[in-house]
Image (cartoon, rainbow over all chains, first blue to last red; front, side, top):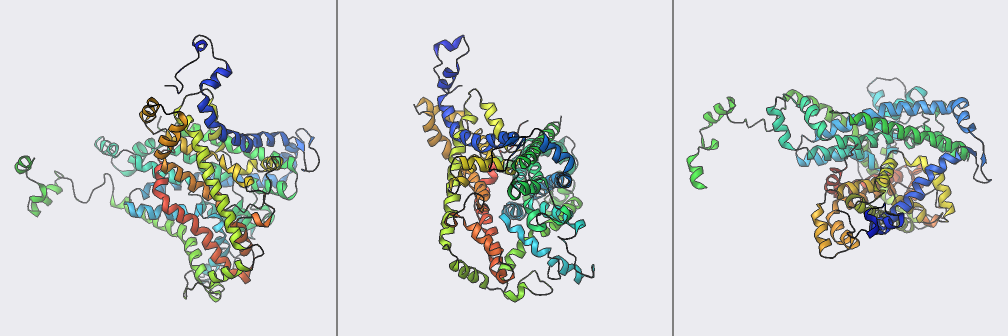
Length: 311
Length: 312
C-alpha cells in the first residue's frame, strides 16, 4: 500500500506530472533528501568530476586545460610504473580477494560449530586486526631488517637463516609479505556477515538434509549451508573485492612509497603519488577513473557469477 | 499430563546397560553425536587449521599488548622476546608526560576526536536511517535508482573520489573545519544499506496501525521505526566510529587546534627510538579502543549483519 492514500483526481487515467508525483510522495522524498544531497556532493559529483578531470591537465592552481585522451595514452603506454602497480594490484586482487573470501567463509563456518562463549572470543580474534586502525604498524617491528626484528630473531634462533633478511628492502619479499599482512587485516565486515548469516540458517534444514541422505559436513556445506546464505555471500564478495583492490596504506607503511624498485606499488599508491605529491590532478584522475572501472567492473562480474550458485 | 508420562518409559529411567544397548543400536540417539554429520577426523582437521590460523592472527595483537608493558631495555633486547618479563606501566606514564609537553594541550586533541567521531556517528545514524525508512517501507518513483546508487558506492573505495572531494570541500568553504571530515562521512553507503536491509524486516502492520491512529510518517519514523531498529543504529555507530577513529584529518585540517587525537598520537609514533616506549603505548591505545567498542556491541552488530545479505 502506498503511503499517501489520496491520489490526485487526474492521476487516475493520465500519467501524473512530476509535480504531482513529488507532492504525492512528499514525505518519502523529504526523508531521503538529506542523505542523497550529501551523497550527491561527496560521491556522485566526485566520480563524475574524476572522469571529466581525467581528460584535462590540472595542477589545482591554474584552470584545467582539455587534453583529450593524452592522460590515458601516457598512463597505458608510457608509464612503466603504472604497469608495475597495476600488475601488483591485480596480484593482490587475485590472491587476497579469493583467499580472504574463502578464509572468511572457512573461519565463520568453523566458528559456528562452537558454543556461544568460544564463538565470541574467536570472532573477536579474527575480526580484531581489521578494526584496530593503523595498529598494523606492529608488523614493522616483526619485519625489521636487522637482528632485532622478531621474524629475523626467530629464524636466526632456529638456524633457518644465517644472517638477518631485509624483508621490506628486498624486492622479492615485498609483495609476498604485503599479501600476508593484507590477509591478516582482511577478515572484516564480510566475515561478520558470514558469521551472522550462518547463525540464521534454519536448523531443521540440516535435519531434513540428513534424512535425505547428506552424509558428511562437506556435503552439508555445499548443498544446504551455502545456498541458504547466498545473500551474505554476495555482500561478502563486494566487501572483499573492494578491499583487495584498494590496498595502499600497508604498502606505504611497511615498504614506503616509492618502495624498492616499486615492488610494493599499487594503483592507489600511484594515485597518491600523482595526486598528493606531484599535484598532477588530471593524471591522478585518470588513474582514479581506471581504478573505479576496475573495482565496479569486477564486482559486477562476480555478482553475476555468484548469482548462478545453486541454480 | 502426568498420566501420560506415567504410561511411558523414560530412557533415563532405564538401567545403564540397557541405555547403552539402545544407543548402540541407534534406536535412541547417541549422547555424543549432538550434531548431525560430524566426524571426529573432520573435527580434528578443521580445528587444527583453525588453531594455527588463530595463533597467526592473534600473535601481532599479543605483541601490541606486551610491547606496551615492556620497559625500554626489553623493547631493545636481543634476541627479541614476544612476552614481557617485568611488566610495568612506565610507557603509559611516559606518554602522559609527552602529551603534557605538546604545544596544543592534549585535552584539546581529545576534545576534537570526541566532537568529530561523536558528530559523525550521530549525524550518520540519523541521516542514513531517515533515508533508509522510505527506501525500505515506502513505494515511490526513483527509489530503485537511489538505492542502487548507494549499493554501487560500496563497490569502490574512498580513494577513487578523494581528489575531487578535496576540491568540492574547498569550494563549499568547509576546508579547515570539522565539517570537512564529518559531512562526507554522513553519506557513507554501507550504513544506508545495512539500515535499509534491517528495516525491511519490521512487520508492515506496525506502521499501519500507527497510521490508522493518525500518526504522520515523521512520527512513525521517530516513535515506531527507530526504537525498533536499535541494534542497527548501534552497528552503524560502531562502523562509523571505526572509520572516523583512524582519521588523522591531516588532509583537511590545517589548524593544530582542530586536529584529532589520532594525529597527535601518530606524531609520537614517528618519534623514533627515543620514544619507542611511548609509541608502544600509543599503538596499544589505538588498537584497544575500537576492539573494546566492538566487544561491547558485538551482539547488536551480529544481529544487524544477519540482514546484510544482498539480492541480485
